[in-house]
Amino acid sequence: MPGTPDLVDVDFTLEEGLPGQFGGGIGYSESQGLILTGNVVHTNLLGTGQRLALELSGGAYSKVYDISFTDPYFTLDGISRTFNFAYRDIERLTSSYSAFSTKLYTAGTEIAYPITELQTIRFGAAVEHAELGTPLNSSTQLQDWVRHNGDPFFRLLSGGDFVLGTQYDAVELSAGWVRDSRNRLLFPTSGSLQRLQLSGTVPGTGSVEYLRSTFQYQQFFRLPLLPLTFSFNTSLSYGTALGDTTALPPNRHFFVGGPDSVRGFRDQTLGPRDSLGNPYGGDSALSGQLEALVPLPAKFASSVRAGVFLDFGQAFHLGDTQFLDKAGFPADYGFDLDKVRISTGVGVQWLAPLGLFRFSYAFPLRYRRDTWREYGDDLERFQFSIGRAF
Image (cartoon, rainbow, N blue to C red; front, top):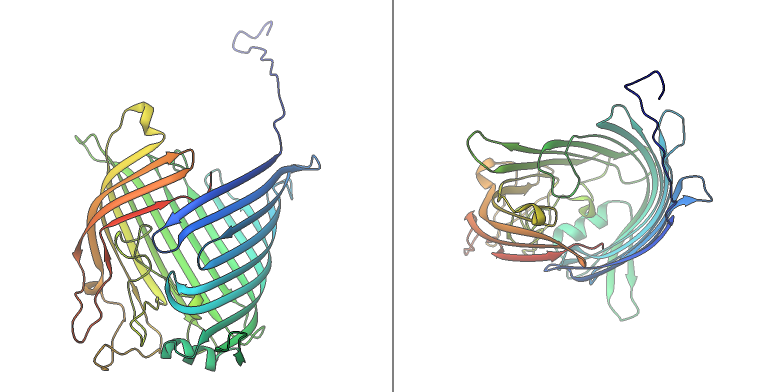
């Protein structure tokens, strides 16, 4: 610019992209088999910058339908607002274990406010109708929960089978805080992520009351004289029943084990076992992964990640639910670091056109063998999954 040697005129040519997108996905996990997803997203509804999304997914044991509307410019201060409507129909408590059907109808709203460039806080409210059911040959713990909570019912299904269940309505409030300084969302190499999420039912708004909380911390770092990037990720979760509710609803339990927590153990199988020996999940959980990332050539670094890992984790039960071991003696699943399972191994992630492929081969270092009295851990050294979206 004339008279200002440190300024220049810059001309931009803008070309508007298509605001509407159609997508789909094929996912696979050894616990749920093939998973199909589809979505329709419009990111500039009627030229307002608002986002409308419809997402569908279905697998061997679950169906999810979700529609959301987001206004990212709800206020001039950068507050966004989202409305969400969802239906979830899940036939198992833990992947392929425990016949426990869950039907959830949810309508909610959430606002998000960026308090700094790296930090965001969120507040939400939702109205939920839940229908939970289990057959008469299910575990004592599942039957006891549906008998003593919500509005119990006993029904004869069209196939001649009986189901014991309960239903309830609840108003749930949520709050969250996120701080994310990672250099990128996919395959980051520096920075950290902290996420705190709290949710709970409003006392007096329904017959089932509970509180849940989860904290996640992830850090990428380097050590002197080592040409390696290290990743550390840990998660802590806790939930409890409130009021006259006897225990945290089974579908709100925390589950540990598998590719997302402790590799080398079957998906969602660690922690308490019910009267049939099936995984029951816990009302609290701990898991973590420490991984040394293998340096790769620049042309592969954006699509492939490989590393050597050390995983640990366990699910616990701190409530009043009673458990027995195989011999019929009381079993204690309370918090105890000596019960934490540990594994090590190698893992590879590959971002392919079809999705994110994940492979791992693990060696369990601390696990429980099956005995005449205690249930053993379900080991699975090789694990493979495909991301759902592409």
